[in-house]
Amino acid sequence: MKKSLFALSILSSALMGGSQAYASVENPIHVVASFTVLADVVKAVGGDLVEVKSLVPVNGDPHDFSPTPKDAQDIKHAAATFVSGEGLETWFTKIVKASGSTQPAVMVSKGIKTHMFDEDGHKVRDPHVWNSIPNVMIWVKNIESALAKVDPNDAATYKINATQYLKQLDKLNKKIHHDINSTPKNNRKVLTSHDAFGYYANEYGVSFMAPVGVSTETEATASRVAKLIDQIKKEHITTYFLENSNSARLIKQIAHATGAKPGGELYPEALSSSEGPASTYLKMMAHNTDLIVSSLKK
Picture 1 (cartoon, rainbow, N blue to C red):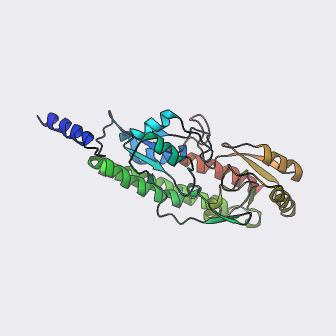
Picture 2: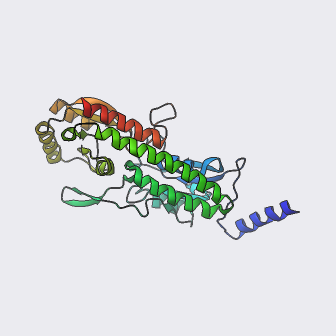
């Protein structure tokens, strides 16, 4: 009888358009995240009670993404949808409209102090908040709250998962600070493909230079590239890094003009496949730091 009433309450909620979900390990709730980094953090908080679909695939560019009709269906039927916000997912509003979903997305970056970049005389907000671990700790709290709202029966489990994950994040954050602090302070300068590491720079004390702005959809101007080449030569920057989610053509041209040598591949905004070095957010931050520290110590 109790099982019948429980099933009836679920059906009634669905018919009335209710958003409450009921999760179990055998029957997890389905949620959608905009890109792989965010999807991994949602999974860390949700654990076995949540099945997470990332719209942007591994090694994919979250700025320049073309959603499919299948993505629209996933959004329509999701118990919750998560985005980072702050101008990252410019394509998201269109796919939500196509899906017919009336459920507002959870913007996990709410409460994070963002900063602006000056790009050719224009102020642009930097959306790459996750490259600072303290910002992702804010993500975690927002994700925990959202999951508890759609699945209140398992709120205690989400709190336990979030608490454990926050401890892992705090431990890694301290290690990154320690590793960066072990490098010569005057030498903490890095050349990358685009301005994705502003929050990493602010948190850990490394200067990043790039020919392309905060979005890979923008084009580098000839004057910007020329100034960058002059600056690299003047400051004796000897190493450049590729990025897994965008083209290496321009950065290689700049490296050729300056004599900079490759330092490896960073993962600024997309996880690798499960076989790669950055298959989770924790691994991504550790991998990026290991490469950066190795180059700064040379």
